[in-house]
Image (tube, rainbow, N blue to C red; front, top):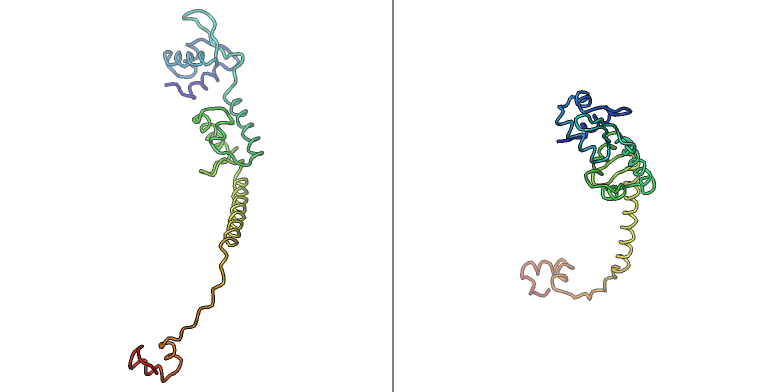
Length: 196
């Protein structure tokens, strides 16, 4: 299995020079067969070029070779420009911005967060720094509060509490009994059917 570490090791060995398979495998501490697989993969990707004939190939970095650090810096520059414009990015927007796969975008984001150049806050999104995240939270809370106030005002206006209609006062025996002490005593003795 080829890892990024293996590819970066080969790039470091070939930086500014050229070497054969044996020299490269010795320099990175890998057996010749595995090193040949790594070099073949890099050759197909256009990262290295090879000259010479069988068994004596000489490998060097391609003329249009862009180092992983240069790619990272270009992605970071684009992301920072978009974040300064928008204030927040989601992973889907970052993936579309970089025009990369989801895996590559997440890998870039992890690297940027590890270096402290970007700040990721859970499902809230990606921000330039923690201060930008706090500012986003404050503004979003204010916007939600205003939206809630507007919705409540519309609700109150639509469903305004209408004044209660005056109720007709029905003189029930119980109420009459409570009004005077003598009636209350009669009511207690004979029940609600009695008249005072």
